[in-house]
Length: 132
Image (cartoon, rainbow, N blue to C red; front, side, top):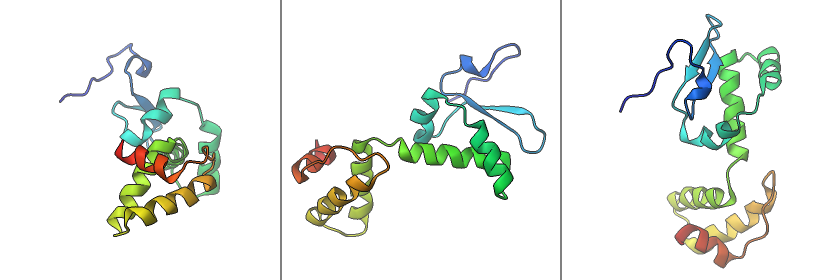
């Protein structure tokens, strides 16, 4: 499958899902047309976090492109829906060999400690999020 490429005179905004970063070497603006799945919800809103990226570049050994990716990673992590979090944690804990009873109890204890805690969910509600 081919990816659409911007043509001269067209901005990145004309391509859904596209975003851009500045190349740390040349300083040129690079349009990245295919966003990784974990960034899609974050990029739909397209908030500008240039001041945070600038701060990370000044205060850490990260280059500008790396700092932009770190910001996107953190935003994507905190933008995860309750359903997405429950499903992801269920898969992770299941892969560690835990049984469903222990998994759902652990998830129920973890949910209130998220950055923005969702409403409290019963074990039955957690099971329904995973299994429908």
